[in-house]
Length: 84
Image 1 (cartoon, rainbow, N blue to C red):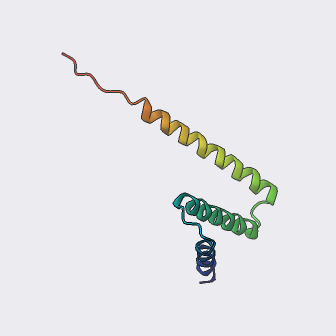
Image 2 (cartoon, rainbow, N blue to C red):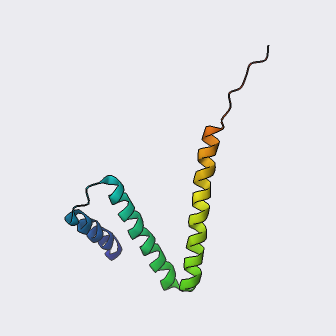
Image 3 (spheres, helix red, strand yellow):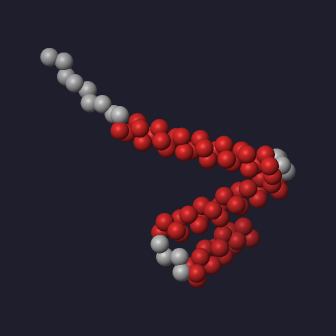
């Protein structure tokens, strides 16, 4: 219950500050969730803070590469030609 309360408090704080733009709001929500994820991983002591930072950077880099590849894939779709 306290975890959901934390997220709701953060969202309420954002609305109070006047973040109306959808893009700003979505970025803030993602930042909150990422920080919460990092906090949970750090509490579990699975990895050190440095290792967690390195791994998160690697994941972000891979996500960017995936997005680029998806964009290229959409552009390069070819049409099949009927053989006569």
